[in-house]
Length: 111
Image (tube, rainbow, N blue to C red; front, side, top):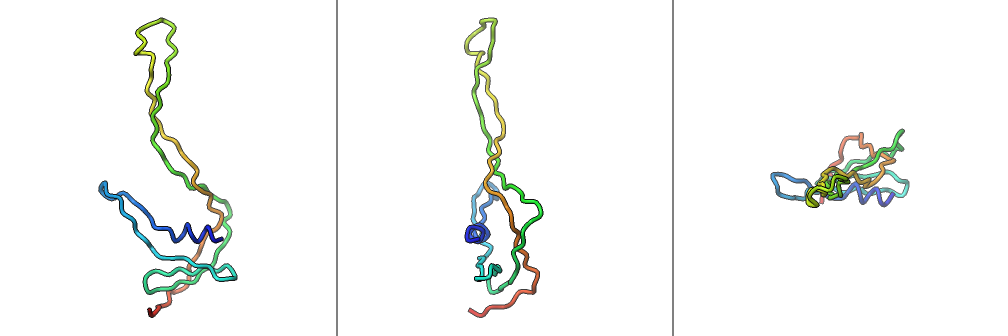
């Protein structure tokens, strides 16, 4: 469950107009009984962690290019025997088994 807390509180990175930027939404902490607490700015939300009916995979898409030999039995020019293939590879980054539900009204925190 500690790994889930790290994943939930990790900053997001996005590509906005060709510029990489990081946006931190908040932090998630777990009580000793396993209940999550989300802190966003000056607001605290208490929630529950429930197991999902069907887990799903988190995928990362990567563009790949490969050069392969073309089996040409006619004996044509050797430079034409190389073939460029471009495609997409999907890498499994993680599997989500639990979901965090914050269904209560946020409580204000004085810092």
